[in-house]
Structure formats: structure tokens, C-alpha cells
Amino acid sequence: MSVQERYRSVAQSVASVAEEQGRDPQDVRVVAVSKTVGLDAVAAAAEAGARDFGENRPDELMVKADRFPELRWHFIGNIQSRRIRDIVGRATLIHSLFEERHAQKIGAVAQDYGLVQDVLIEVNVSGEESKSGIRPAEAQGLLEFCETLPALRVRGLMTMAPQGDIQAQIDSFTGLAALSEALRATLPPQRAAEFTELSMGMSEDWPIAIAHGATMVRIGRAIFSEDFTE
Ligand SMILES: *Cc1c(COP(=O)(O)O)cnc(C)c1O
Image (cartoon, rainbow, N blue to C red; front, side, top):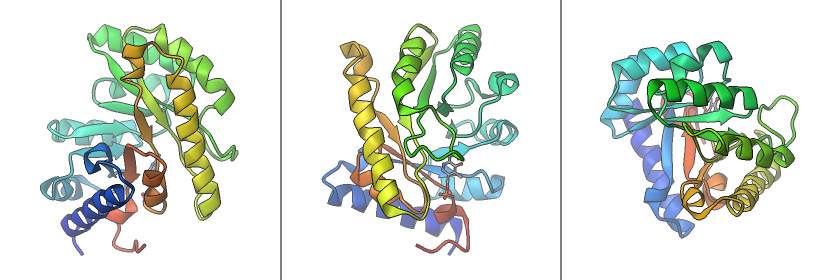
């Protein structure tokens, strides 16, 4: 299958799983994670209808976002202070914020650029040491800090579930959804209405994530890899 065919097939499956779960398919966005592929594959996926793309390295984000400014670019990787100026504004949404010092700097750079940067707080729900993200108990403190920064807008939460363990995936996704509800309840109504995104689910576990409320699924291999089979 070509990238076009794989993207169409994934987008269709995502929409039908959303419907089966009683969700509006419009409420579940596919972020095509293009971190391992080049400009040609991005163009192919875009031709098949992809509009949201995810990158985990600033250099790749810069090349691709500058080449395809009409697409929406999501930053899903490790944030380094010295690269924040390259990410802010290029990324429509930063999914991987979990440190106060990075929030501070993103807020300052966004203010400097004259824009408001949308971000998600990455939460390590499973507690695996290999995973990045803030501990669930500390998320409220970080959210409160972010709320003091006028050029930073937290739109919701992101997590990565342990791979290869369905029960652990269910626990991660239900945990993130419950935390999101609890945090939303602490926000004033106008901000609560903007705090709606749950970025969870990847090639192996996105159907489970949609069943538990994902509004964005980040799918790489199922779209871009020849070898990936469900
Ligand atoms: C690579 C990556 C993905 C996509 O993973 P696949 O298994 O290829 O779908 C999603 N989220 C993050 C944060 C990633 O780094």
C-alpha cells in the first residue's frame, strides 16, 4: 500500500471506531506522526487528506513546517530550552510540556512573537520510569502556574501508554481522562471550555484511546511504515 492508501485507511478506521463508540468522528483528529519520513511522504499523506502532522525534533519541524505552512504542525517531542524559539509559533500545538521552566520560556517567547501558544501538559500516568511527563499528582500545580502566563494556553493533556499491555493502556487512558475532568473543574468556565483536548493513542492502541475519550490520536507507523500491520 502507498502512504495515500494507508492514510485513507487509517482515517476511515478512526472515524468508524469513533462512531461505534458513540462519538462524533469530527471530534477525533488524526495527527500523522511524520518524524521518520521525508517531505515526499508528508506530501503524499496531505494529498490523501491529512492536515495535522506530528514531529518530535525541532530541526525536522522547521524544515517540514516551513515547506508546508498550510498544514498544522504538532510538536510531540522532548522540549529543550535552547530550541523553544524554533518551536513556538511553528507548532500549532505543543503536546509535551511538563516542566515549569519550559512553560515560563514558551510563554515569554510567545509573548515576544506576539502570539498565544497552545500547549498540552504531558502526564506520565503509568509511572513507567522510561516515560516522560509530570506525575498526575503534580499536574494541577503546573496547570495553575501556566494559567499565570498570558501567552500560554493549556488546551488539555497528553500521555503515552505502555506498549504491548492492553490493561495498562486502558488504565493510562482512563487515568488521563479522569485527571482531565478533575483539572477542568478547577478552571473558570471560559478556560474550562478551552481545556478539552486528550492527546492519547498511537498506532498500536488508538482504538482503546478513542473508547476512553481521545480527541487526538498520534499515528506514525500505521500511516508511514510499510511493515506495520495491526
Ligand atoms: C513516535 C510517536 C508517536 C507515533 O507512534 P507510532 O507507534 O509510530 O504510531 C506518537 N506519539 C509520540 C510522542 C511519538 O514519539
